[in-house]
Length: 235
Image 1 (spheres, one colour):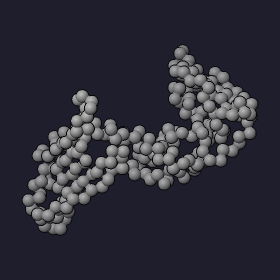
Image 2: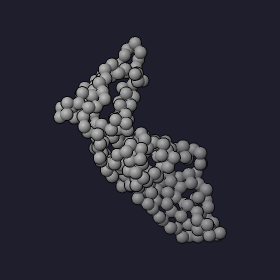
Image 3: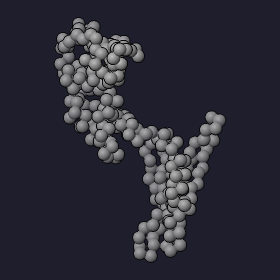
Image 4: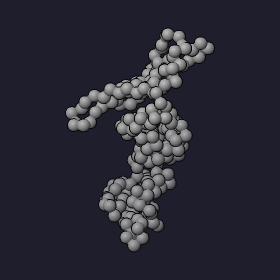
């Protein structure tokens, strides 16, 4: 049996061990061109299950060159968490759901994993897995902030007259600044305020990231009692 990469081999063995064999394994040896695993309880039970995959240069693929199975240990049922059911595997399973619903709730993750893999996971692992899935689909907070200046510049280019103001803080790293806040207001909203009440309301929401930022919006009412957003701020 061949696999397109070492990661593909590892993912396949992991999926088989969790969903079908319902046994745990340990990594015996891992090199760029070799991956060898054995039963996690081989020393305690004498279980001889093992698998070795080696990169085949002539094929450009990983191939299973040695396999001893099935498991002979008596670890038939793992009642709670499976040791090889890691957050990366769960995150891969969650990708489609996160793409469909960016706000996919963590309360569904634990039940979804149990239905799919047959094992329970802790709330912490569910949260870590959901976070990893969101980062794979939408990027990390850090990568998003790095894209923000280019996004705002493009926003101004497509919406002439849009105002953007930045305040960045200096760091102890030369040439590196930290976002403190960014403010922006679209030109149509600025012009529209001339025909609105001279009363501005500000509302905001906390962004649940490790940086504890807030998203603010300033609004007013026009002559038809309709809400007009005036400006936005992230900081």
